[in-house]
Length: 309
Length: 155
Image 1 (tube, each protein chain N blue to C red):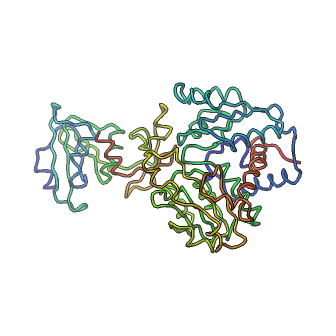
Image 2 (tube, each protein chain N blue to C red; image 1 turned 90 degrees about the horizontal axis):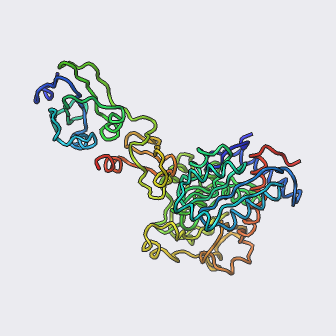
Image 3 (tube, rainbow over the protein chains, first blue to last red; image 1 turned 90 degrees about the vertical axis):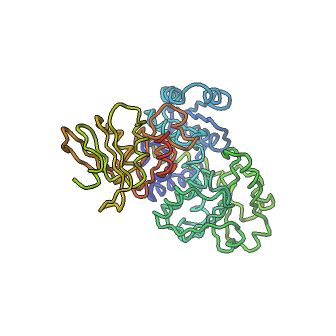
């Protein structure tokens, strides 16, 4: 029971068989087309978003509601006023008193870990600064498994802001638990993946290579994971200006791609993927976004120790 | 006693920090907060020959015994150092400093968006590597190297 009453803080806490257990549960939810089930009746999820979110918050809330649970939320102005004044620790104590599980997003790295040290209820990291977004990584790998039949032996490209995008980092940390044939880390020089993540890949014997231009490897890729430039995380606005618009995936680049290539993106996307790609067989990001609810439903049932019959 | 140690007079009570990597004795003084305005005798020898290190520095501090936190600070800056506790001109205890597996509270996380910089909590670092020194913040995952540690400790 690796998920029972457990905090979900970083994807590195989980191994392949945990992923598999979660994915089988998500499969069941999809197969049964569950719209409403009273598995989590009487349970309350607190979703506390100290930073804007569309998909993560809404899909967690939808997941909880489809499982028969209730949701209380702390977002927007309320969360921002707390951000300015009240201690985060006090806020977490309050959330813990009012709910059975807490989903937290926060601009500061380590916020979810700190919350988990304070709260008795399980804490799910819905994104902490540039560091982790573990539930997105579960969804990303679930999407790969659904589209490709497995996660091992594929060639991956991860394109974009690899320095500040927590989604890309969690995706890479998750891949390290599997056996990708190769991972290409494609970014402008100043947005290279952080040394902490690179060391983790090395320690897990992952074959990876850093490069600047996706054109150089497009023909080899089975999966291309794209992220937007995380403008809000740049400490220096000038640094952002220098890399703004520095990469863009276009139809002409895809001319050399395998017909079976699938493009993932955690969304929202800005201008890094040209719009005409949205309607092609390559685009898998809307499917990926759709899996957000069933994967999060699967996760919640496992944390609460419930089974989908 | 080695020749190097004889270059300055013995101390009656206090601490001798030996085997400091050459050139770092001043830094060790700084991290221990020794400004030279104290009443006690302080002797520093720099760049003397050493069998183990080639060259080394030695610091003798009269009337001071290091607290565990100070020993940890010395370990981070001068990992080869040995501490000799002197009582009545004799070494009563001698030990080599060692970097613990976890560093608590001695330094703050250099990442401005780490939660430890916002909340009143004790920063914690895992020791990833001792040589070269590499620490990792347990909250935000940021690496901290020896130069950054020294920079903070001498402030």
